[in-house]
Amino acid sequence: MSFPERRLRRLRRTPALRRLVAEHRVSVDDLVAPLFVKEGIDGPEPVLSMPGVVQHSQESLRKEVRALCDLGVPAVMLFGVPAHKDSRGTQADAADGVMQIALRNLRAEVGDDLVLMVDDCLDEYTDHGHCGIVDETTHEVDNDATLERYASIAVAQAAAGADVIAPSGMMDGQVAAIRAALDDNGFATTPILAYAAKFASVLYGPFRDAAECAPQFGDRRGYQMDPANAREAMVEVALDVAEGADMVMIKPALAYLDVIAEVRAAFDVPVAAYHVSGEYAMVKAAAQLGWIDGDAVALEHLLAIKRAGADMILTYWAREFAEALS
Ligand code: PBG
Image (cartoon, rainbow, N blue to C red; front, side, top):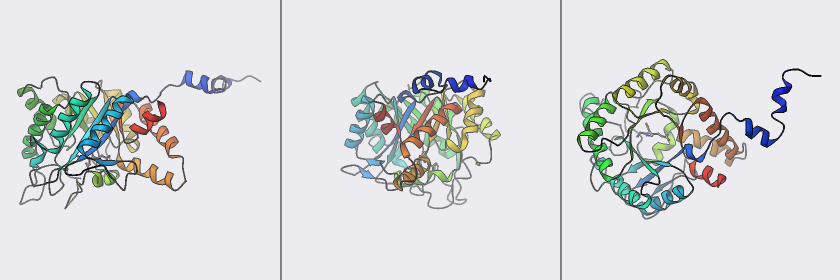
């Protein structure tokens, strides 16, 4: 008997046929590895809520980035954990701050063979854990006072060797402020990857262990997006593109595949998706219990993020995935 569905089945018969007709694939070229570097430690320290992820010392970070580069991973996203935190996050743009030291080391290590992306935010550097300057009386984040800090941090990071500045604090006007500061200081060729649609997600919990940046009071719902809103995400992305974002990010990834697909369809800039700490931790935990095949689930997740339209994926699976392919 012949009926039209047979056509689909005929093309599923062997692995080679399936490979030939696959519409999407995940490649090492799509991956960005998020990494943490902590001041004042002698070697890597495990992050308990993220099995396989560590806080790096400067030396272990250098080795990790070298290994990723040799595996063909094109980029890393760096987060710094300073020894000293204060209300203005002064270590974030200090010339001898943990991130600026890391950037200079890594630039010397890998040259132009790997893209050094860096988080431009304050939560890792402030004692209160918020992403901006907190007003003493209202206890709210002061948007405009924060912009000056982000601009200064971007210049310090670019001067230390960053290839891409990634503002993640969801302050209004952050892309414009950073673009102007970079241009004025001789970094007109440094691109901005804007965390454009960043939702106030409960999936960032493990990251806050890794970056030691849980807010000491309140939460981030005043500046990050409400998970209920997809139309608003389009407005956020449009504003960031208009302000000069070279690439835009949607974060988290799996619970926001609709947003990734809509942004992909409506804008022509490269789209990044951040497969965040909670998404990683859930799979690792279930795999440790023997309830799922963690690597297979992770691959299915990465493929779904690609299928939705992401051009690049920030994922804690980058190293394992690159190793499995090599
Ligand atoms: C803020 C920042 C966060 C993440 C990346 N940048 C945390 C937050 O907004 O609370 C989370 C990433 C993850 O969960 O993997 N600098």
